[in-house]
View 1 (cartoon, rainbow, N blue to C red):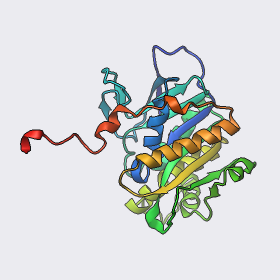
View 2 (view 1 turned 180 degrees about the vertical axis):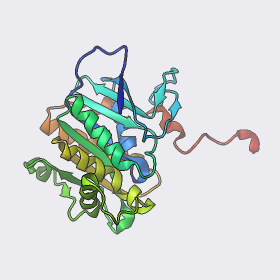
View 3 (view 1 turned 30 degrees about the vertical axis):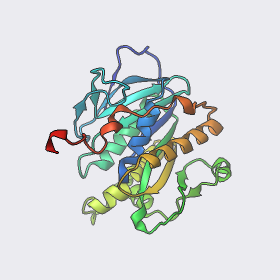
View 4 (view 1 turned 90 degrees about the horizontal axis):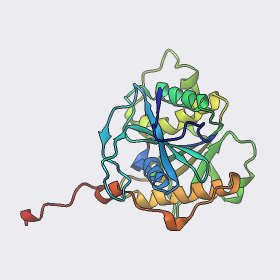
Length: 263
């Protein structure tokens, strides 16, 4: 994985706390990250290039107006006010390469001085979890979980995805037959990122919320508010809810409006 620094950013180390999305049901992690990088205090720090992430290119998706700024598959941002490094991923990982991608990202994070990683992801509510109100689930390498208990978050217990990820990171056995669609989309991205960061000795926490495919914008707002609450208590971050803006790309999240001439 190659890191290409932005020419307009001052040449200095990135903040040690990294926020990144994991591809998941409803793209909740990516939508939440869009909200984070739409903050006025966030600047683009550079780009990441990895052979296992499908390439894509487009116009600035944040706005508030399209300015012709280049956007690619993996981008790195810095929240200068709250001391955060943020990675946004806009395209899928090559099928069967999630293990290698997770290893590359964890290796890069360690190389730029990251000490703590927070992974944002959705979980498949079709697995039989029915909730009347949104609930945060978490898994963490932090031995002090008092802050999570104070927030009344629930630990993700008996996760087959996490157990399987540790095995894949250490090396698949002879009976390994690749990743199928079911375990890839439901659990592999967040669990492999978690396991690879943990293997590098980084402090890592996954912030998870059960959801279904559809309008996942409310899920993204819920995840972001939960993250901000956590960072305010653990890192002294200060977020102003009045500065949050809706990313420009969300105006056509379900495609462009129909052509009036068809009527």
